[in-house]
Image (cartoon, rainbow, N blue to C red; front, side, top):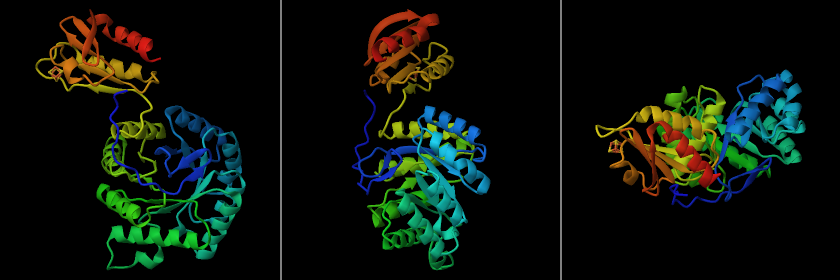
Length: 359
Ligand code: SF4
């Protein structure tokens, strides 16, 4: 395949197992998301997990905010085909129970659990269950020793809090941690994670921009921050928060991993912006090709170009492509024409060639 490869050497962290997925070590960067359903409604939650899995999600998180959610949590874990992370805030007893009911990992913010004794009770229960803990830190859950320090920047507070939480877990003999320090700003997210990977190089990092906004703004913010970090070899698992259907988070995460040359799950479309040389309805053709590529599993690059004069050459690194021209289109591969087809049949011809070569 002609996908770009990311040349950056990734720093190896301690590998941590979340169900059957390894986070860190030499494992590929994994994709995760979070259910938006009420966990107490196990059917709805399992159905959303199935949709997330079909989109390529590898780890799923569900909220466990109360006893009703806990009641169905065991069934969700038992029937989910993805490892399930229990997301717990404030009440350490819910975290302890989640360990006993089949969680593949916990996500807790030690800064909002209430006391070190309660945090320790959670650590010990996760240790007994043999599951890892993601330590979450954000502006609202800083270590109290850092929260009120007027002499520190927000980045320093987040990094200092995260490092002190990790140290506490280690002192208790618990090493299976994944760390996330999240902000809604791109610059803060990049600076915090750079500092964490420098100061705690052995701890796997869960990266993403939190509260990033709707699909358009959230995609841009996550691509800017997480893309920059991944290009530097930082980040072991990603969750790209969007105020949207969580399936869209997974789609964007895979597009980002593909764009930075780390992993490709699906085809990538290469299409030109068109210009005065464009000789066919490129936008209509590109929309149709993109729609039909959703059913193709091969991780190929497929070009759709506006003119036969420049298109095949400009997209010579695509695995296969179409370039249009006055009622006809050229089907090409590696920059060389395969055959000329009628414009009306061009998309069908492209997909039969994709079927023939790549399925
Ligand atoms: S492929 Fe042709 S139409 Fe598209 S941008 Fe290049 S020159 Fe313009």
